[in-house]
Image (cartoon, rainbow, N blue to C red; front, side, top):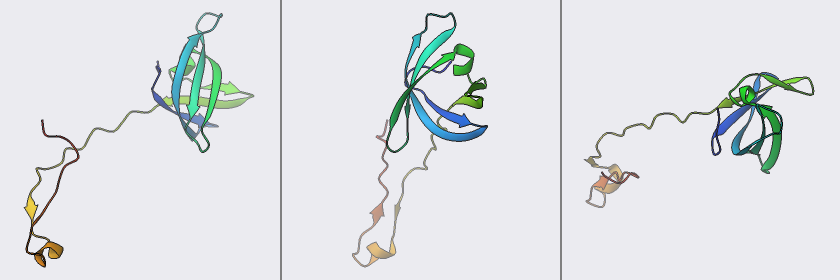
Length: 109
């Protein structure tokens, strides 16, 4: 089941429509139903609260006003491992007599 802070892709009529972040999941008075607050990542951003069953939060298809909807969890792609940085002679640097070096964004471990 999606949890607070997860990013989901909302499908509208079986087509990807918008990304949203799950802000909160609060139980409803009915068993297995929840108030799910979503921050729609649109411009401008909007907050909506839907009352959904736990199965719908897990990705099962549901309808709103007869329109099929689905929440699809978004998984981050695996981080690409960069090859070790090397000092390379650059055409721009050759005019200055120096070498350019690639500086990684990630701190060395």
